[in-house]
Length: 279
Ligand code: APR
Image 1: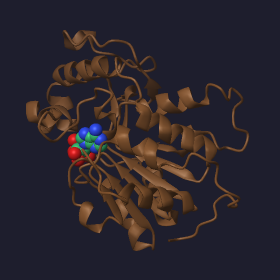
Image 2: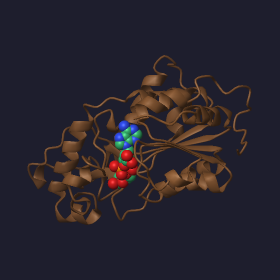
Image 3: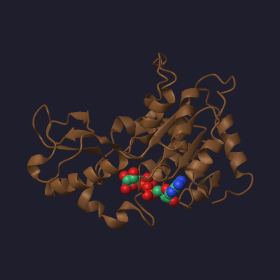
């Protein structure tokens, strides 16, 4: 994979001079960590039908099958580590509180990278610059579960025994059936998360889009909101997507080779925090 000469430099310059940046990621940023993508040659949707496994109707119809599939995905993802692209973003967010991250991924690798990046800085951020606060998991988190009866959410990393309905995970509060705390097809995203993501997109001078086919709404619209409010779009993806033709810079390359190469490595130079300077 090789990007055209000058694109890397152009992307780096745009990001270095941006006041606020929104990063939007998809399954492609985790592909090199071993997490399968959804579409494309070896994508999950090649082998499984989303309507059979990732809808509320599927869960009502056969909760055991749905948990069997999510249990398999959780087990596979638990062996995956954040890659250099996740880490470069996490370290950038530590240096610059004007960098927001909205991910479509439920694998938790951005949160893992944020914990890894913070480890040398044990003290918590009194100024609210905690990167987790600037990480929006638009489609939920596969290692969090929600009670299908009372709605209580909880971190949930135990292995799933999907051998029968009786062995499926239950709510510790009301004994209702737990479900994965992810957004299924036909469900709405959390309105508070969505409102914050679109506000960040409007305020951003640059939207850096990494590893998404940009076909699932509303996430796919975030980048065009940045552009429509005077900002720039940078895309990193080995393939073309619907964003390619409207991107300011579109780089045909992989996340691990390009993200560490273009994210600013120095703290913002003297820019007052939150200084929006639409490019
Ligand atoms: N680096 C960067 N991008 C990559 C890499 C890589 N190493 N490998 C693959 N890609 C790109 C592919 O070219 C593709 O455009 O990542 C993109 C992955 O697209 P999808 O599989 O469609 O995943 P995503 O865009 O995240 O899907 C959005 O769809 O099924 C729902 O909820 C699910 O969050 C998911 C949403």
